[in-house]
Image (tube, rainbow, N blue to C red; front, side, top):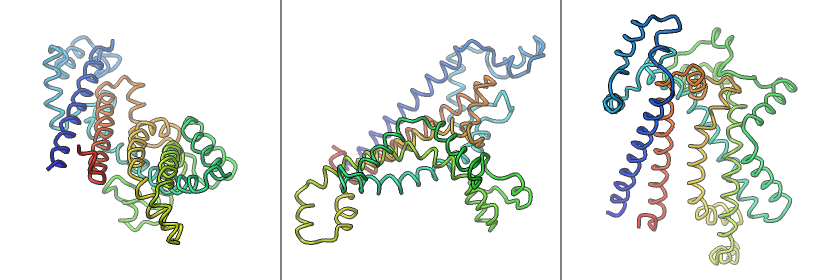
Length: 339
């Protein structure tokens, strides 16, 4: 019963946060000194065309009435029409979001399989050269900007070694010679469903550099968090007792100690995933990745307010949803959180 009550409480607080974000984003987008109607019709529009566009976009209504229309459309998953592409913003975001999510999932998977073992080894070999190197790597991953990592990786693996592609999601020549149907929007899944292994490995090669660039920050966070928690757990009495019973070190470290140290690190993993969603915007520009970041950048450059608002709301909802899921998982693992 306590868990159900906790779910309801966290659901209401998450909805409140999303509504607050929606209200702030709407107000800010409406006080910015610009005329969306003029942008809609183009640079050579007449006064009558601009007036017609204002009526179509409901810009002649009071701001509270427009906010009501906005909330009604938002409940229908209608984010308006893009001024730049004249397509529904929801349609554009859906196409871009799948590319971004594919990149984020690969980056987060890489961060987890590298960060957790590195944090465990750093705690086990505390104050050794391995610990010092891992801490240096973690601090560098957190402090250095992602665009610097991206350019260094491009310089190393594309220009000097010539083994990985520079940018884009798939090679144009491969997409023409080995086409495949985009069923899910995730190219790795779509190419496997089509049994198009040439395109699959090409997509995988294009994912490596941007995914590693995005993974640098979460690797640093996860490594530091896991190391800190493991150092505390390894000093507990039950760990000393396990060593006294001559249980294998691997089982002690990765079975007993990590099981109790991983719960706080889950928050770090989730927050790093949410942060990476926003951090992916710059990385996508560097690698010309056709995702949400590049779509948002183009919308900002063209003053496409419906697209900007849509991207902001989608990113905020994803952030809140990720935190909500992690809170539920933590409450399930640790009953003390429910109280």
